[in-house]
Image (cartoon, rainbow, N blue to C red; front, side, top):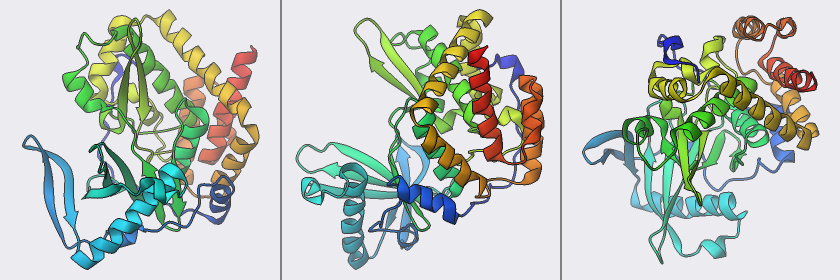
Amino acid sequence: MDAAGSEFEFKKTQRKPAYPIGEQLREYLAREGREVTLPVSYAQLRDFTAAMPLLDRGRDTLWETVAYQPEVMASLSQSLLETYALLRGEGGLRVFSHVYVDRVDFCSFGNSQPFRVRIVNAYNENHDYFYVKTGDASRVCGLELEHLLSPNRMHYLTWGETLVEEHVTGIPGDIFSEKWIDANSHHPVRLAKELIKFEERCLVRLLGDMRAYNFVVAVTPDFDATAIRVRAMDFDQQSYDGRLRFYLPGSFKENRPFAQLCAKHINAASAAQYRREEQSLIHRRLLAAPDRMRDLLVAMESNPLSTPEKAKELAEGLAEYHKDPSFRQHQSMAGLIGESLDRLSRLLRS
């Protein structure tokens, strides 16, 4: 991430509009096994009759636990369990006969207004979550790009206007920066390295708005230290905004502690090395699935994800940032992503 001195406070803007999933994108999703008939829809979950704030040690979590009429909840619970079985086990419901729906939460904060479903194992009380959201094309393309170009595999399903996503495990960035960033349990240089690589991924595939509360830090004990991965958990702002800095996580004031950590522990030469490492990894992932990536970009090209004005603004910003006029020839977000990936190929050959 950039040093704290380059942070930028973005003005509040109107809520991003949801872009419907178009026919060509829908065909892509069906071909890749993402579009399936789901037992539950987002519209059904909106039919709750009561809601109460969900608190964490007295702190408002911005989530509300919702309730339904008893006869509705009985049917809904079964549909949610079947949905969970599709997401986790490709429909093998008998294997999931011992799990139950413990709670349904709703969040009106943010663009997606998601429902979060808590699933509990009756034998050992272990729990898991999944999310039900509106099927916004931006979010779907963001999930698919994450699946193809990042080290993370994303499990999600679509059906009509409904999107079902798995839970992304990790400590939310805002909580991590508040409670964990100075902990002795992890190596600060490793964290700084992963932050720089994360920013490079966001810029290459144009994932915006990665403020601290939109990504998680996953810490895994290793034999001699801890392994750390920074990964996105919100894909609503995939290729939407026209401002270049929107795709640089270090630009946000909410990420100041992370930017300061990078500035303290990583010099310019090391930062350039880590960015090159991530560029190479992205390129290798692209080479592993070139046809699928091409089909995705074609589908994105046919599906509105932003406005022509924002695409033009971003093209200019990318051209200046990379000192590469090739970006100016593109008039869509899909074209800019394709040019960004082509740029990696040219860069790695030089």
